[in-house]
Image (cartoon, rainbow, N blue to C red; front, side):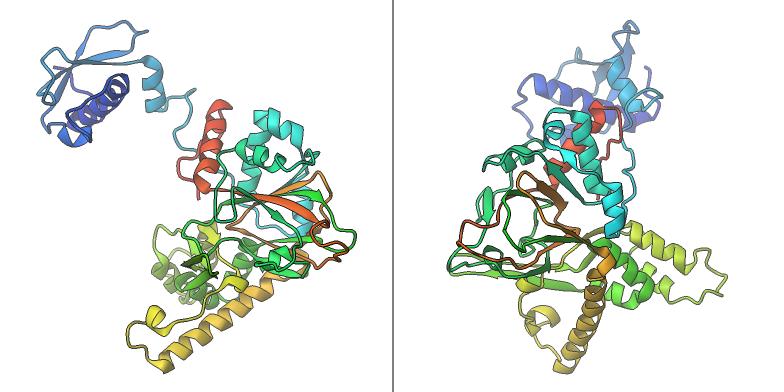
Amino acid sequence: MTRTPDGARSQLWAYRIGMGREMRARKYRGHRTIRTYIPHNIQASRTSTTEQEGIRLRWTNDVAGYDGEHESTFGADLLRRLANVPGSIPAVAPLPKRVHWSAAQQTTDVPDVAYEAYMSDDSTLHQALLTLHTHGLLFLTGVPENEASVSSIVERIGPLKNTFYGSTWDVRSVPYAKNVAYTAQDLGFHMDLLYMQQPPRLQFLHCIRSSSEGGASLFTDSMRAAKDLIHQDHKAFFGLVQSRIGFHYNHPDEYYHYAHPTISVQLAGGLRLAAAAMERPESDNRFPDSSLEVKQHVIDSLRSVAWAPPFQSPFHGTAAFGSKPDLRVMNQSLQRRRWAAQKFNALIHKPDGILERMMKPGECVIFDNQRILHARRAFEVQDAGKERWLRGAYLDSDPYHSKLRVLGRKLRSSLPVSPP
């Protein structure tokens, strides 16, 4: 008997791989979840194969339904990938760090991308997807000026996200608009569809017709604002991390509601430890990490931001503070939230962080809807419905990350398993 290097665990692991391959080749009607039926005392012995064939294992104490002749073969290429030996594709590779940009830096770092290259060249697409991770914002140029173009741009990555607005939608001034986006009014910084449990990750806006006067698009990096906030007032920062704000879409035909933290982080050590570390005096030598190091660790763990004041739902005492809220405590809590939100709002509107662009026909902006805040200046309407026409669409996180992995594997580049 020859055991695999890690003993019984590796035998179970190897059996799962072998069974996974066999399950794809034929239907196994006996068990829907085959892993739970693997005996704890299953054993494997190696049978003779050539080096090119890889490894062949024969199983004893096998799963019910198999006889003593059951064998699994693992090809050399598969074993190299699983072993992560030099020259193989890494199973996990870190993505580049995010860049918390100013408007000048974004303009310098991220040149426009040609539509034709984006649609036809995988290296260009891969770089665009990495840019959306690092900076969260880019522009395509030379996009055909027809209504179907935005769908093609999205589907180059993955399937369109369908909502009650449809799989694609228009941003243009219309009479009796049910959304301020469909008017000519100034539109403040916000993110879309935060009243949903899973807001879209990427948003696409293709300019088909621009306005004759006004209507510039504005963008700012909310993660830069969060970074500035933790350095200026860490209590306000953690207040926005630890409290959830409700958003809703209240319409006669639809009602959506969901609550998100204003700032979401993913900390291995937990929020309480990081928040407590902020309170330690710098002179306390019992702890190796300085306050600045802890802050940087928190900044690196930023996942998303949720900011859409026009769609914020009313505060309900019973929902937010329990069945019998203390009005004094509730008022104090709301005042702390308001104080923290005002500080964050001021940082969002720092002039050097606002990128302004008058989009032209044939341009399409792509941005991370869980990071980049977008707004619009008011514009003149000479003929309602025929001025400033943008065609929009959304994409979820999973197909975006899937395409990033597939292209990384194809181009032998970074291959993230669970990117933030």
